[in-house]
Length: 179
Image (cartoon, rainbow, N blue to C red):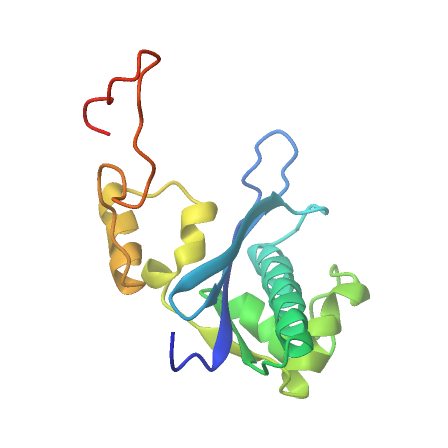
């Protein structure tokens, strides 16, 4: 694929989505061009006290994953920029400033991303919520919302098996109908 200049990581969180533990979920997708390289949906290790805090943790996870992919590509001789996409204004603001500001409940060790944003070793990009593919990993979406995200990524859902997939046969060796 030509014209790939950056690793794109999309991140999102579902604040206090686990009703039992009150932990938030971080979800994300790392892409190289049109190709999904990695995806994740994990419980955050700490209980976030605000949506902004949960979003900062999701941005951190996206950035760390993207930096890992960037490091591997650097070792292979390919230098690419890193762009972190988020739909969270507050999370982006926390990651873009220096220090805690008026927010006092976030552990200082979560602010490492601020250095990388200031040094421009990665770029934070605001994306509209309805186009954020990491919503697929953190929220319950309608079929229309899923289709909108997939169309934005220029991906589509097709029924059936790929022509490249191996043919399925039954135990008696007969082809399976519809396969």
